[in-house]
Amino acid sequence: MNSEKTVLILGANSDVAKECVKLYLNKSFKVIMASRNLDEMKNFINENHLNSDKIELKYFDAVDFASHQKFYDELHSKPNIVLYSAGFLVQNNEAFQDFEKTLTMMQTNYCGAVSVLNIIAMDKSNKNLERIIGLSSLSGVRGRKSNFVYGSTKSAFTQYLAGLRQELSSRKIQVNVFVLGYIRSKINEGLQLNQSLIMEPDYVAEKIVNVGNSFVNVPNFKWKLIYQLLKNLPENLVARLP
Image (cartoon, rainbow, N blue to C red; front, side, top):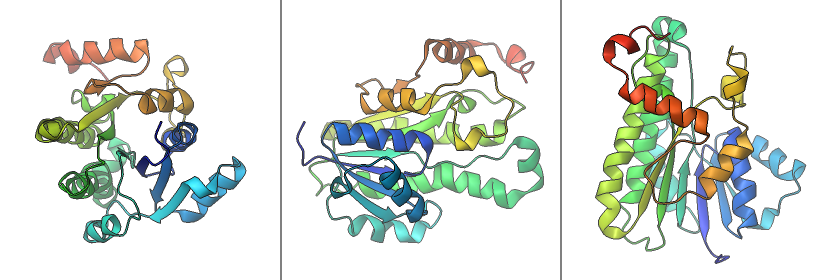
């Protein structure tokens, strides 16, 4: 692998993103870790004894849309691969009562992604760009009463990436979406989840870093089955789901 290749990870403090950092470094990529919490990223690098010469830390706020152009313009090297892994989750009962948190969820999961990825994708001067990867969710496959507010943000993101894939195809730029189930991560802490369905961050990261050309990617055969069931269930049966 060409050691000069660069991957930009937006939302680099997520558990999956951190595992991706390790794997991209193993593939001789330069990694730009972008997040609001620079100290947490520094601690992660130090605790894992990573090669800091191959890592650049950048402050990135997904919901500060006005800063995104400046953020991109100031990158020392334009990316070959972009991974959008920023995410925010509140449960439906909380989303109904606190619109500020709901708005943050919408802005982080969808609006911020569109804002920064539009800037990156439309920079035709970056001849290096070869792939954009977005992390979405099974929650966005069908509207279900337990999580449809969060799910709607992920559904919108998936549809955006589908169109972006078409837009960039003439430039031979791949776009992939990962439709993810439960992961043992910070965003799911405290939730009552089926333990047999939980995926480890390093497992998901390995699938992301080694993604092929398929647009939709669903790691784990159990989640592949659930994804197909959700897509194809009649509406009257979906309405019975939690």
